[in-house]
Image 1 (cartoon, rainbow, N blue to C red):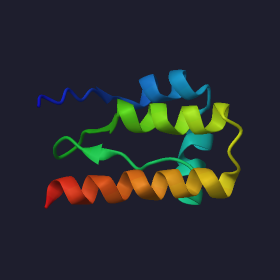
Image 2: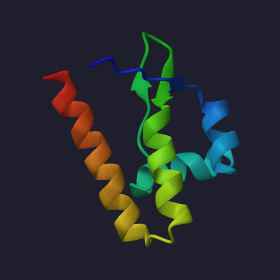
Image 3: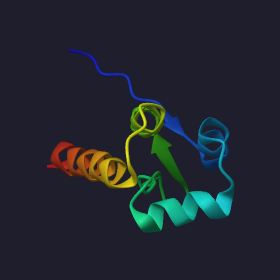
Image 4: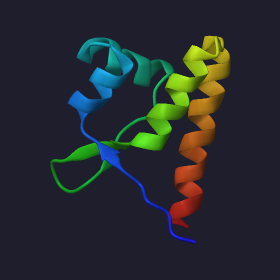
Length: 83
């Protein structure tokens, strides 16, 4: 099975989520957004499928606590892939 993953830079995430930079980082701090993944020494990006999952949860009317659960699951899945 072939898996195609796309990484988004911050400006792409901000455009998709219709949020500003400071709100984006506040959401990360509050557990409402996934943190970025490292692409090297000074570069980070966000897996598109994770951002899409969070957007879908918001559209579905999920509460902040439910979105935190989605974010926690996504971060957990990242760690499982790395092992």
